[in-house]
Image (cartoon, rainbow, N blue to C red):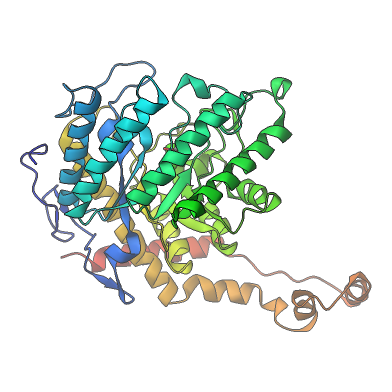
Length: 443
Ligand code: XLS
Ligand code: CA
Ligand code: CA
């Protein structure tokens, strides 16, 4: 203890609090429809952005002032681990997530890397014995090291494929050891830059073989966490195979993996794919594939993955609307895969950022819950599609018709009468619910 001096445990003080280091809307104990906010939201801290990121960007040097900056190697790793549990406790975070490389430095050989990981896994396990914070998921960093320049499970080089397999094998052992709720695959370099040098069919077949082997190994060691694929369309690779939920789902179905995986949906990846966050959540939900969420936001003025802390209440509302309709996130959670801006370099900024994110999702949860309880959108949508509840519509919905009958029916129509979709009215209602919720929580 003692990395974040002057910062006490963050408490809920209500909307009128002027204390920056207090929750204004996130009240862990507050019940929403029989469950606490903590149980529904399942917040998680991302190790990489909070403890390993240093503020480097393509144009500039590190900016982050961190108490562990003077350390290196395993000393640095141990210090970050100690600091992480202090931050988790102060934020009362129920979960955290990491890549293998975040918790332990790579050694000169794979054997050395594994030895470093074993030491750090042991240390984290010890901290977890006396902490409430559990591991939401871990993953393997198969994108930083130059050996993955052409990909990992989709590399043109079989040795890179084998190395990646060894890394994931170890990752699953770590997941088992630390009782992770999930295991994530994000394919940053699983894709291609140009078809001129790419055998896409082989690469995708290999990716599927890799996933099958991971599922097999998890079974072998008794790891029963949920496997998650995190779609992203691009960056760092120009075209990533897990482009979005729809293409990821098609891939899983083609290779018979749809029952073994769900999706970890990141807001900023959704917008990079040209979708909204709620679109990706919705698509996964209606297909029974919503597993977990990387809660962040992009910047509409920038075309890349900015990983900002989520503060847009409209988006958190629509995201929570999907999550509540999904019956919650099950083993998943809301992981802040988000980083403080380069100019927000003081340790206290880490707390401000998480508080802002947690409060924003707490508001989203309240508004979404009210929209659901009052059946606002549901009733509207049901009415909008009511033509499918009787007559020809019901015959279509029940698969009891064909083109002959439909042609006959269409010939009998004099006019097709449509009704307004009224989206401006609905947006106004969502705003009204948002503002009402905000004013009702004023303390
Ligand atoms: C990068 C991804 C990555 C995954 C985990 O854009 O969000 O951080 O969440 O590898
Ligand atoms: Ca992510
Ligand atoms: Ca991201």
